[in-house]
Length: 552
Image 1: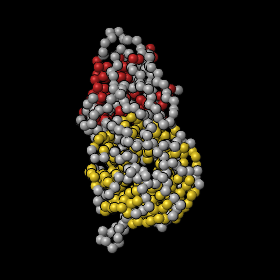
Image 2: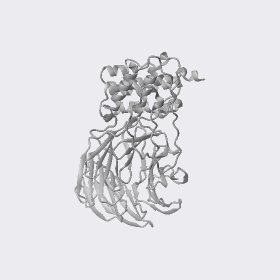
Image 3: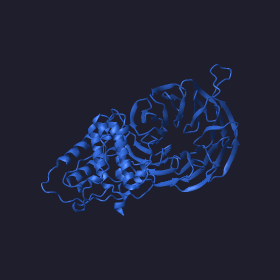
Image 4: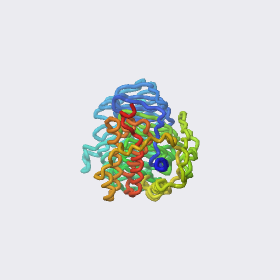
């Protein structure tokens, strides 16, 4: 009994880490049979626009309003009453009810578009390097060529537009290409440009006022003011894959191929960073930077507060390519190739962890009241687990002590690298109320040590002995996948397959895989003791996952 209790407490301590906070609380889930290509949401969360083989317009609660022909590039006005769509040689503008306002044929293939928040201006990029500016009536007001003068020596006929972004007021628009950064009025009048300074421009973002222009490239991030003056520059070892700026311009966020998301203030000071299990594909940020959402190739949407603390993660069925968050930071959406989910964003960070007395798990303090959000949803009640009678002799068993000590190691020394952060203050945390049932004394199943999948000394144990703790964590994750396949007979391709195959252990397994990913892919190499904690959790779960034929 002491062994089981120690493992349960160990698991609770693991789950109290921000890196392991998982959410499965999507308010709605919209499946799409064809592939999704683009996502946009109005700042108030009232409407969601989805691109791909079908252009879909959803209400903020996930209700399907209408759909139209396919779209490669999409955008919508802040009120949701003007919607832009482009694919191939065609661009169209719709009203909020799906009525076509106008349609225009392009001379070249569309390479991107952006609609001003007020819906009055539409900028459409065409290969190779052209940008056309239309007004709300569909009148072409200006065409600019970012390739420059054909007579110049540095003229590049194959320049590619990589991103277009309007300021929040719609008065300015920035265009980034493989050659440089260009800044125009909403009507297409050129204000300034910087050619050959980006080393492969990849993304651009503009604040609401237009006074801050953030630009990403293969070499790093640059921030310019409204006159084109370079305010600061941050070099990057790997190309930037995602970029965002808060509407009021105080926070700039960038994701890169080194699997990090980094937050800077307006002066270029690095505030925080977080490591994930894959590249970050898209980033959204609230009005004042107090809430951040980021989609990663590790199939997770991450939700951060303004200090970089992970509030929760939302799992999807593949790479999270697109995300968006409301201006007030209370509601977010995320999309994989075939799913769009909407979810509330916690408004409270984690609070201080208190270690419970060793007498009974029933005394674990209950969580604080669930935070309010832009969407109302019933919060599931977590039952207080029953406690079994104390074994004779009482006191703290050696294994329980080791378990708590191991948890303390994770909570203390291992915290910074699990968060992927460097020297920033640690957030306050709390111990969550247990969300799984702890069996009564008489209900504890017999030991089934022989049923635990063999963890070969040639795999994680060998890696651990050789000091390769990162590889040991990765191998333990693979071992769990093989165990689930063997016990359930279900082919496992992604983490969601494993969770679906073991519904009774879904949340436990989600926490295990998240912890394994943190240990296996975080920038700092994990300590041996931290991997040994993961081994104990593996062994506990291996006992709980019974062969499918035993359940019949």
